[in-house]
Length: 537
Image (cartoon, rainbow, N blue to C red; front, side, top):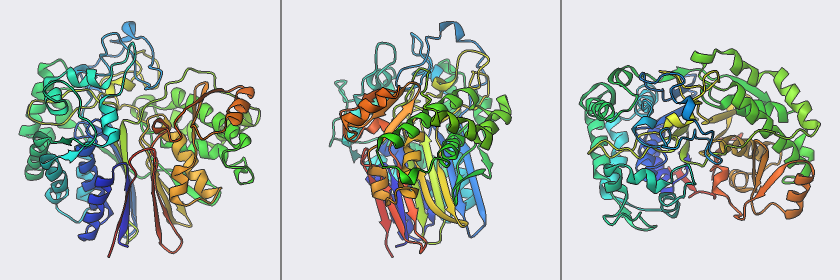
């Protein structure tokens, strides 16, 4: 084997494996796979979105995160929406307004970041030319692809009394409707062929003129003219000055394992905090899925989620100190004591649906790429003839002044992506990540514990029954016994038992386990469409 690709779509994994078989490294494969995902998962990721890329290049001795975090436009003003704010949505974490200003339309758009971040990955680590890495996505966009059951379901996913549904967003923009609805206004059904030649043409322009065209060339001018003409907060200068952030990630320890993930405004510190807490609870003596394990797990996740609300934000705005609290051993000790005392969360919930995507690639030379990318939800806006949908990242700012994630011009948007690399004895041992918003944390914690404490292989680790916990609530899959759910309620948790045995809203974990002998074991969550592809010699 020359490597493995795991991601949420089988076709994307297949295209990534082909890049490896053609002689590309893990970074070539990851960039190509990411662009293919933009075509195949157009409501979850795209040129108009955000990205967090976690990279390990042992031959260069480099371990980096390239964080393409979106930023609020310079036309934003602090507190400008505060008086109209209706709170957070129950299952998306989005800020709510009667007119949906933060969740759809031009006012929901932040400065796009994905192209700049992937370009930096390509320049620094790839061996193949930039145009070659966009080629597979161009071909699929032009030729079309069968709509999967998951995408068809997403096209028709409902909103609620306040939050708009998918069709509301698509129908709000004539270009989006033209591409993603039939002429009679109906959504695409599973198995129907979806083509997007406009998106393919835009990718060809980027391949020919380079990624700078998106920000400072003719393509960039088309983008900012459309945004400016329609009341977006993103200006020409915001687009032209955008740069991703590259840094060496910080680590924490769990037994003999070293845990690396991204810094704020990403959410890697939450993963590190949760594992710091659980490290002192001797979980290997407990039964997987048993009452005591789930009690410890649910309490930890709820308390860490509360810390997320209090401390996670743009370090340029709130400083480094709040983030340092999350990964401190002192904080882990405090939270662990509360868990042992049976603490239960007390805040409202804001669980977010998995409108994001993730990929992992490991090649035969030990290079590793873990990339999570997202539109945040999606705005429903497409600039005429460009084909891609913009993010709706204004939805995750707090409109009220004085909070870690309060709205401010140029401020990086807090995101819950946390692509993670796990090392053992200075060798990469595990690569993991997931889409799923708030549920990313709970998914990755459980997948890690399944491997490290319960000895599961990659497929079993991502497939095992799972819970999600935040606020007051614990969500359990249908495979969780009724008796266990009742026992959790007696311990003070609010429990929702999902009838589905594999609940997609609990995150779609993607995992590669690297054995001591270098053997690669890939697992892609069956709650999604399970993309695993091995590259063969």
